[in-house]
Length: 323
Ligand code: F6P
Image 1: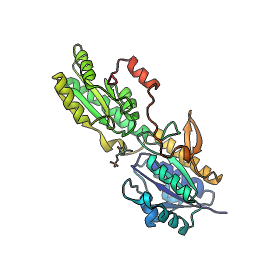
Image 2: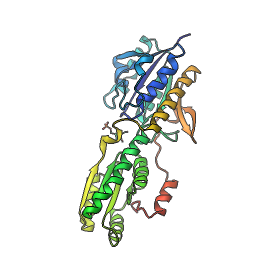
Image 3: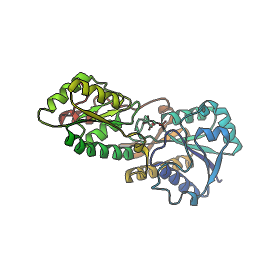
Image 4: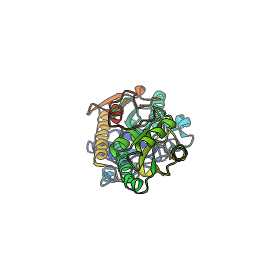
């Protein structure tokens, strides 16, 4: 029998959302199933706003940023899930694919507990979704952030300044760690590790005996970049500037890696739907596509573990981690 499957994209957008939509819709449509797009995440679910998504609708969107369906990360919709469930039933959905980060997946799990059949897909540039090695969007953010960290070296050196770059990552420092290391940042400040700015200042002073400049990468969840710049200047007497990368990290076309991951996750999610494996989230483990129970993801955050190999690598090459 032909299924009618809903799909929504929730939370802050991430490059690769359209690749996922394309993967889900094309896989299901080619087998004669119908896909129903829910607009603006849970907002559209509780307000009953949706539209059919046909094969042709998702043609040509693989490399496009944003999301065809719109998204939302505010409002009270997640607290009105019963209204959402009523629309799910009114639309005659056989199941729902929820593409999102920690918040969306938590609400999706709650919806499944109310009786909906749900499959999850891990999205977020922060890379902090539990139970998967990677969420799509992270590689695109990494590419923007690493490029910026690297590029700032030349202007920092020209002026002999401390250049502070604030990257995204509210609860986890994955972007700061990866982009900092890949961009050659001298100091990396992660929410997981905390930091002592007097130690950082001592590192900077020591470094400036032989070098003219320092590039500091700070995750927004560790401190505000402006704050770090101001305080470091005061402690070292060295002029500083701050660059906040902000939403540039989520903007524009997904990297090829995120187009691939989005496609794999989309096709994988459709596979779970076809196999009737509800209540699961597609995941990547050791490079392999797999799935995990939504219950093992909901309400959890994947942070950088203290013993992570890249932290050791950073220390080994003389990077200051704030302590
Ligand atoms: O979770 C993704 C993220 O980009 C975070 O890194 C950031 O803190 C947050 O979303 C910002 O969200 P917005 O500005 O869309 O409310």
